[in-house]
Length: 275
DNA sequence: TTCGTCCTGGTA
DNA sequence: TACCAGGACGAA
Image (cartoon, rainbow, N blue to C red; front, top):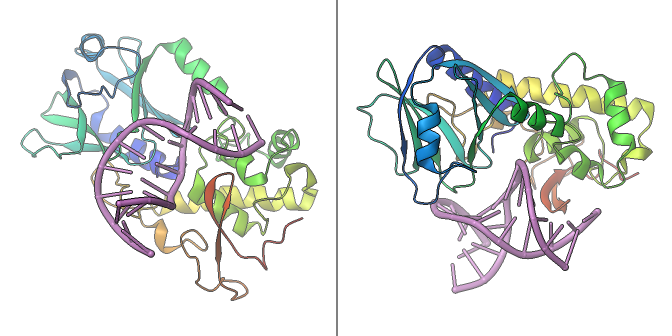
């Protein structure tokens, strides 16, 4: 599941490889178009001939800025991958969209479960997208005060609030479970019940797990790969996610798997006490 | 605010 | 063979 650290890793990998390359042609390989809002032919007509100027990440979105003023917006959802390849490399059966670039380079969107989305946006479209999303948790502006302000308005569970991209951008199920364990907060706590000290712990935990995930180049269970097709390494450092039955690294009690906000949720029932 | 939907491979 | 995994969005 590509979350902030995974998308950031892909963005960094791709930036050094595809910036200043021309899009020479586009191949849409799925009868059900991966491209949202525009017929595949129109998509090709609007991007072929443009140069890739910049790659950015906003939340879990990867934004490819072109020389013609348009942006290709990619969301990998659960199983999407953006892989760099050479034309001679045989395409994976999972390939859905191929951008053929100058310099005999290809950028391929592969997706087992076909949830990934690609769309085209102008500057205003990117502004609208960004406005819909909450703050970037690794930015300087993401202070304890900002976190407190955004959580105080929430009435649902802490986990549901943290998964909402309009509250904070970039967190998904893995890093939310890890951050809540790190902060010793139960996922079903009401956000408004958090003390100043607990908010401080949560703020530090969110940043810490994301930074560690980034340092490990993301988390791979089965699907996630970086732009070169390599798995990440953070799964070896996870403390609760997918570790049900294993001893809590702090107190030794078995990690429990339950369901919160409709998502599989992993926690230590001794270290993370409901408020 | 919660649930169903999209989708397919892996697992019980 | 049925169910589970889950990001985002629309419906109830």
